[in-house]
Image (cartoon, rainbow, N blue to C red; front, side, top):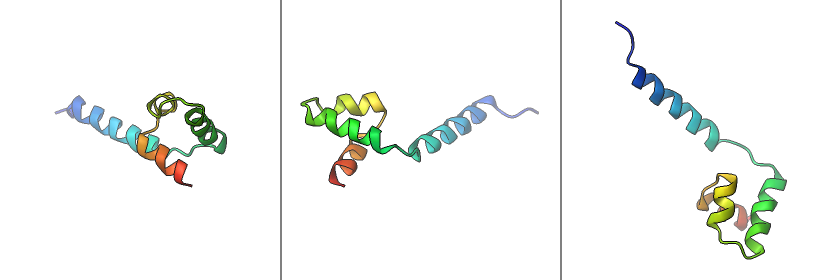
Length: 63
């Protein structure tokens, strides 16, 4: 009996999500996001562009 392919797909997705959440950002990327916001761009736009959450943005801003 072969394993269910749906289980394999879910496991693969979980690994991708774990890898992306621990992804390190360069200082230049952080500065770019913060400068975009300072220039008057809504928070959601640079977050979407760089693939980060609002929570990460506010963590960076508080540093």
